[in-house]
Length: 242
Image (tube, rainbow, N blue to C red; front, side):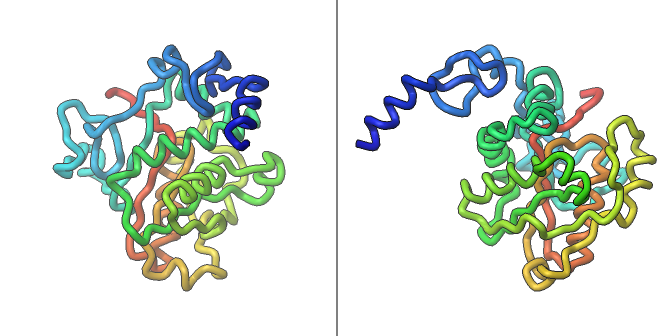
């Protein structure tokens, strides 16, 4: 009976590409053309920040020059794809276009990217939005993705592990120094979850890694709350000059 219902629903609502809307074989997938335009990242990335590195091998622990000069506070980071072309369109549709359905395929791509970061007791949490920003947007795209990711992996999930008490406005258009200044002390551990955070292996989830300012502030908040280790994963990342 269940199979007949699913078949009927597919006839009425055939699966469509989450990027362009053309019909595809399965729900929440990409058509061949859009798949070719999304620059998914493989294993040849910096083991610390996930930056693409030609000829590198993440399993060997290779680290990019930027991370050697200034090591991020998290231990390892990964991203699913570059913030370009169809990948950028997917992120913007999820973030600003009310395309919350994209969070489901995004979780699959995040799970693939985050494989080297996962531990058996991992605690997954989103980078938080300021409450006024959340009220205006109505949802936190990082929370949608991290919730779907945790459900997919059967991992622990805490949507409000961290609180954003400052930096209410958008960071778009700001340079790295301005972003760091604005985010100074803007993210803090939620005192309600101090016991959960203490000693935890945290995986932070966000939509885009640009300068890294937001993820660094969130990571420092986790470490301030006595997390044992923090890794980060984003749907996309800006990777200039690579």
